[in-house]
Image 1 (cartoon, rainbow, N blue to C red):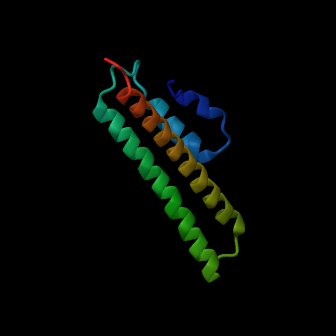
Image 2: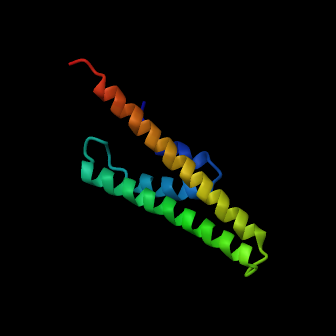
Image 3: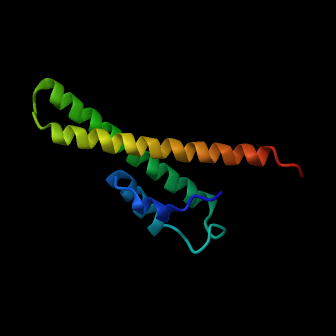
Amino acid sequence: MALDITELYNVSSGAIKDVAKTAATNKPESYADQGFDNLLHTAIDNLVTTNDYLSDAENEKIKWALGETENTHDLSIALQKASTALQYTVAIRDKLLDAYKELINMQI
């Protein structure tokens, strides 16, 4: 079962759209042409993006808790972006682990 990045454009979250656009623009003609190095760098970039969203959400929570801002709108947006990006990252990780387990269990 292959993951089609273009299906993610239907999701309303900006975090997933950003990641999907990056992956779609970096997508070669076929996955056979794409080296493991490129795949690894794309995965690392997606992890960095997820980490950035989580850091932004934490910073917004701290600002709100200290009373530096009363704008709960920015806080809720940052929390939703972080949550969606983390859910996407965990889903990709789970798919990769399932694929790895399937490869390990193959009979040669």
